[in-house]
Amino acid sequence: MARSILGLWLLALPLAAQQVHISLPDTALVTTAAQIDSALSARLGSLGSAGRLGTGYLLISATASGPETVALAYERLEFPQAGADTVLVWDRAGQELPYLATALTRRRLAGGQWLTMGPGMVWQIEGRTYFRRPAGYGVAYRVADRSRQTVQAVLALDQTGNGEARLVGTFSMDLPNLFGPLRRLQVHMRRLSPVTQTLQIAYTEPRFPGLPVGLQLDYSQNLRDTLYVRREGALELRSRPGPGWQASAGIGWRRLHVTAHGAALGLLAYAQRQLRLSVGRDNLDRPHNPRRGYQVTLTASGGNLTGEGHDENDGLLMGTITALWLNRLGGWVWAQEWRASLAAGLGYTPQLADFSSFGGAASVRGYREDHLLAPGGVTLRSELRRPLGDSGRLYLFSDVARTTTGKLLAGTGFGILLPAGATRMQIDIAWNRADGFRSPKLHLRLLNLLAGGRSGG
Image (cartoon, rainbow, N blue to C red):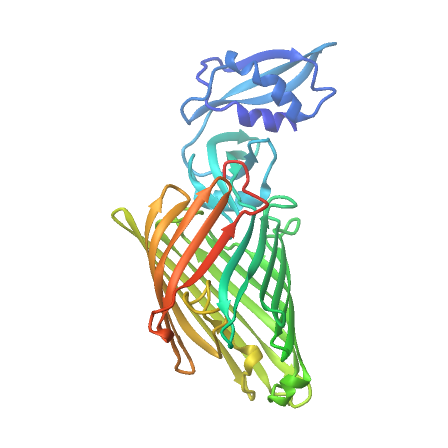
C-alpha cells in the first residue's frame, strides 16, 4: 500500500542516479500509507520537484534499517510516450477512484481538463504521469471532485381558472458522490395544487464488483386533479460503453389507480410490466454553463396492460428523445434544445394519464405549468446567451411546441443566471402566444439553497 501511494507522488524527478535511498522515522510500522506519505512530503525537496513528463522515480522498497528508521529505495524510470496497460485514479486526498479508470484509459485527459460521468458527476484533472509496474506501464491521474451537490427550487406565479393567483413550483435535490464515488441520490417534488403533485426518487450504484455495469433504482408517484394516481418503479443496469456514452436496460412496473371522478370521465385503470431502455451521448466542452458541444438522450419503455377493460394484447409504448446543441458566435453562445415525446398504444388508445406535459419553466416558458397535456409532440427551446464569467449568463429566448393533437404553443422573453457564492438564481420573464404576448409570466429558479457545491466547484 505504501509502495503504491508513494510511487505516485514522486513524479518526473530530474536526478541522474539509478537508485536513491532516503530514511525517515519509523512511521511505516505504526501508521497508514497516507500518513507515511504525509511524513515524506517534507523530504521530497531533496529528491527534486515535478518536472517534465517522461522520467521519474518509483518506490521499490521500504525496509526497517534500525529500531526507529525506515529506509526507502527509489528506482529511476524512463517512460514510453505510447499506450499504457494500467490506469490508476487518485483524488487530492490520496483515495483511489477505480470507477473512473476505464473512462480515463480511453480519453487520456491532460491537466486542467474535465471528466464527466453523467449529469452532476464532474472531476477536474490536476495532473498525469506514467509509472511502471511489474506487469507493464501505466498512467496515474490526480483528480479533484467538482461535482455539485445541489438543492434547487423552481417557483412560478400561476393563475387559476377563476383568475386567482397562486404560487406553484418544484423542489429538487441532486446529490452526486453522496455515499462514495459515482453513487448518486436524486429527489424531485412538484406541486401545482393540493390535488396535483409529483414525487420522484432515484438512487444509482455505479458498479458491481468485477463487472462493468452498475445499478439504478427509481420510484415515482403522480397525483392528478382528483382523477388518478400513477405509480412507477424500475430496476435498471447501467453502463458506460465509451467516452461520453451511457446506456441502461432494465425492467419496471406501472400502475394506474383511477378515482370515481376519473372513471366517470372514461379513464381505465391498468397495471403494466415494462422493459426499459436508454442511451445517451455527452460531448459538451464544460460541465457547468457550457459554451460548445452537444448532448443527446433516448429513453423508451413498453409492455402489455392488464386489468378490467383490457385484453391480453393491449400494450403501451412510450419514448422520448432530447438533444442539446451549443455553438460559439463570437462572444455569444447559441443554444438549442429539442425534445420529442410520444405515447403509442397496441390495441389500446393512450389516455390522459399517459400524456406528456407542455408549458412551464422546463418546457414552453410564458405558459402555466402543465398548460397542455397531449399524447406527444415536439418542443424547441432556443437561447442567445451572453456569458457572465464561468457560472452566469444573460440570454434572449424563444420556445415553441407542436403537439400531436395539432396545438401550437409559443413563448418568448429574456432571462439571467446570476451566481452568488454557492447559490445561483435564474430568472425568466416570458410572454406567450395565447394572450397575444401581452401579459408577462415570471419563472424563478434558485439553486444550491442548502447543500452548496463541492470544494472548488
